[in-house]
Image 1 (cartoon, rainbow, N blue to C red):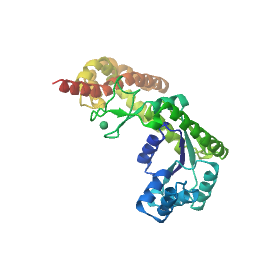
Image 2: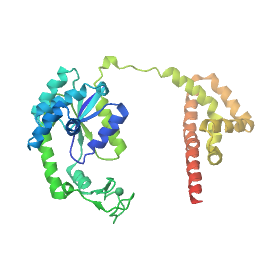
Image 3: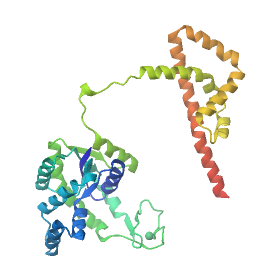
Image 4: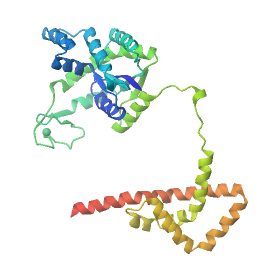
Length: 333
Ligand SMILES: [Zn+2]
């Protein structure tokens, strides 16, 4: 279940993050702007009302928007939740929304605030350039310096008038003014979760997910999973893999070269066989001794695991690296 309201300044990446949440969790992004446009285009009852208001140059009432939201949330795809975007914008709307969601039995789980510093927002928005032909959005900060045309079709890039710095300043000020009371309102209700919105897209998404799904879990319900049996099984495996690990780390260069398509485990097994053939007497004798003392066995298996780690890493990474090398070589041709 993911019933959330998204708050975020222009340029915060709110739209992108909403789309990713939508794709991963199968809940619709419900934007008041889209709802209005859609209703007008389809000529529904509410759409007709909205159109006449807009044609008269007036703002669409909260009542109409709430009606659209109600309609939208009753559709099947909103059964597991929704991501509300662009609504509410003030306390009155927040209260009205709360009443509606209560009435239809779909109360909010959380309000996510995608938090990005003004300086960063300014940079992102002011750097935005759009291809007039294909609509691709670029940012001059991530383009090679001096780029002025679209990489796809060579069309000259342009800057939207409201992405000019002086306009951005106003947009951000309006956002702040609108959002501050909402932030206070939702934090009083215990629903607000701030998400750090700077950094890699992927990391921001992980934070968004965590914030959207996090729910306080009562201590009595926290299950302590039994890992003892599992780790016992692992230690015995580690024991038997010890010689393999050793030889694998020694021959990791060879493994790298050979392992190309072979899974790491297989490679390890193979070198285990080799190892068994050569220093067999050496490695078997201490193993037998180890059995006599559980404590010693535990220690040595820890050591074995430690020894195995780097080896496994090397063996595991090798195929990918090798594959990359191969594709590089192919490209050259
Ligand atoms: Zn283009």
